[in-house]
Image 1 (cartoon, helix red, strand yellow):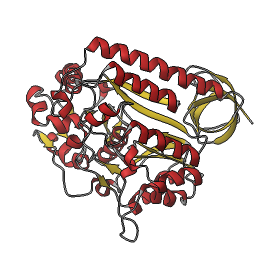
Image 2 (tube, rainbow, N blue to C red):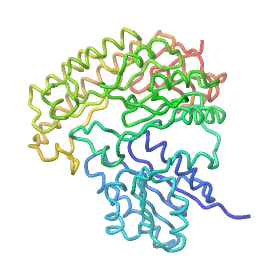
Image 3 (cartoon, rainbow, N blue to C red):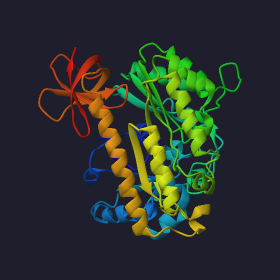
Image 4 (cartoon, one colour):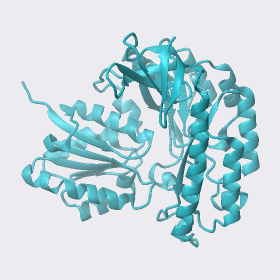
Length: 440
């Protein structure tokens, strides 16, 4: 009996990278690999990288440096770099770290089996093209394992927006949407393997425009309604969205599709029109706020989430105050805020930068406001009844934890609940990062 080879994958960045890592593991599963939780006993190490944050490439090189000892102990160990840093750096990674055996961009990971065979023959393997073939179709017949109750499903990749701070159009390419029928087939397959909630992924997911069953252009709303018909699929979410692509049809789906959860991540990045224009966001603070109003009219209990960048080049105190004012008006249940970091090759990198100390202060002030809002909303959940999809045991004996329809982490101490159950829970306590509940 052949001993399986062990694969260690470390995933950085967004949910789409999580999805990609799962597909890479499936691709290499056909070559006899099984996943391991530690690099120490691995036959192959893959770093699935993200290029969004500052010094992303340097962090990858630093991580690779930690594996030099493992490579020295086991010359047969194969080391690969995947994802957006791989796409951006390409040959430079192999030049700076000769111990790297393969480099594969996010559009080429379906070629991993051939690349792995090439490395076993003693050659280097580099794939950072944008190939013509559909990587998802190439991977659909790979070995598949039983899944947990939640899963990500990529429906759209790339972005055509070209925000001044963002590298995604350069590392993921232009917007490409998968055919609706293939997405629905994959959703059915996930449900058969135990999934009850699916989060649809895309760099700009609400710009989805894949081919419909009749060959016409489909929208995200139409795709959601097709997924609504999948027996056994109980919950649908999507992320990440752009305000300009929140159509009337999609807003209506939030109000009428019972499987579409009342949670929406809708990044705005700044509350200042001047900065939004410099960011090339193509919307204003006012248009964003009016959009939120329309969404809440359709689904009054919806919980809003957003992204913010502070310290963007040329941001003034007045611009930052506009951001604080917008956050106050929206009242976010979640929000993610970052200090601007330059990305080489993007327009904003060439502009006058804000003093780092000023940017740090602004970030702390914004995060303090967001934290107050999040905590107030969580405190307000006490006494309410929510629907929880239970995913895994909690920290304490006898606990089970899961997510409410609003994406709040909820835990109960009750032996009657099992992984994959969806149950009504009364919230009896609010903690800093989770809610305590009791089964009804």
